[in-house]
Figure 1 (tube, rainbow, N blue to C red):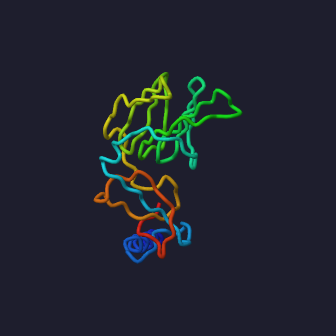
Figure 2 (figure 1 turned 90 degrees about the horizontal axis):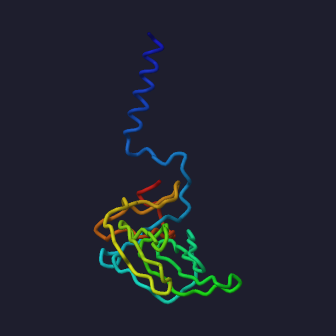
Figure 3 (figure 1 turned 180 degrees about the horizontal axis):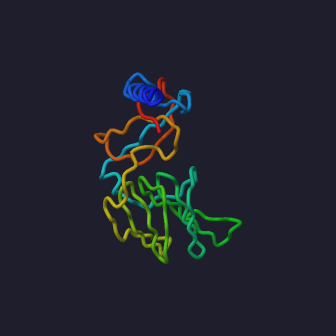
Amino acid sequence: MKKSISILSLLLVFGLISCDPAVDRTVGGPEFEGTGYRAVYATAEEIAKIETQAPRPLRQPGKIYVQGNYLFVNEQGEGVHVIDNTDPAKPLKISFLKIPGNNDIAAKGQYLYADNARDLVVINIADPTSVKLVKRIENAIPSQDYPSLQQVYFECPDSKKGVIIAWEKVSMASPPACFR
């Protein structure tokens, strides 16, 4: 009987401590070292604008899809590089397909599938020198209102600023309110 009362008392104390807002919820998490992640926002109009641009350097490449002599290289958060790889010793950058909020691609046959923030877009790549948007499926992808990394501090999302299309690591004077 005494033992069950002691266990009950301990559970009650732990329960009360967990309700105290002054308790640090990040116990076991990393110590704040002056950096965190800030959301990059875009309006619905900016997100919907998919366009072919001049080639540019690869900065943060992701997945690669090969179709014939062409490479389609995902640029995290920004779009897809189109590269002519006829001569693998000298790949030739053809263009950059700007797709705001793009982090992943997949392909089948002549179609490239890409996330465009919350939307899924289908792009005809039969002629890699002239790609065309075929279809947009709105709100097909759940929004991710936090960075993909774990054990990081980040500014809490604000839907009034738009849709989150990327996260950037920045210096911060104090830890932001959100942690994952």
